[in-house]
Image (tube, rainbow, N blue to C red):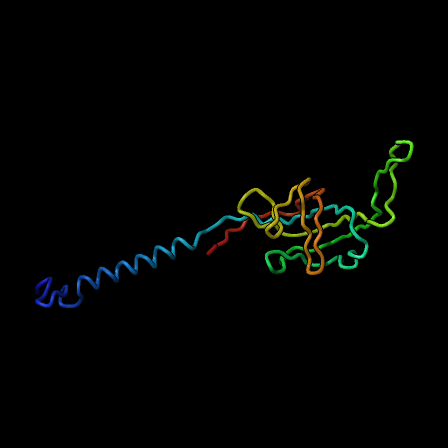
Length: 169
């Protein structure tokens, strides 16, 4: 039995050029398959954060409710919701005619302290709820289906933490 017959086929079965192309396609598919599926160790952390939103228009407050789910990246964030809302008069300082600084309550605006509980899934040490990194002292965007406010994160508490292995595509 010849390795290459008179028609140029290997062992009388396959054309060598067809075999090379077939092997290249298989190698490409296997390479893409292994590159797109990676195992990632992700820390799942239940967190609670408190954020302060200053000088909020009172008419906006009817859109802010406990148990509202947060939104981000065009959809609901599954494990994040508002658990408490505390509304207080906005405190401001004004200068009197004599040049003295006086602390007064603003008759119109309110300060709102919101507590959010959520799950941070991150492969790094950073805590994130949705796509937003949370740290005390950092700006925080509160987004629900009905309202969006910009404030400052006051506190971050870790409630529970565990590690998971997740296969990402």
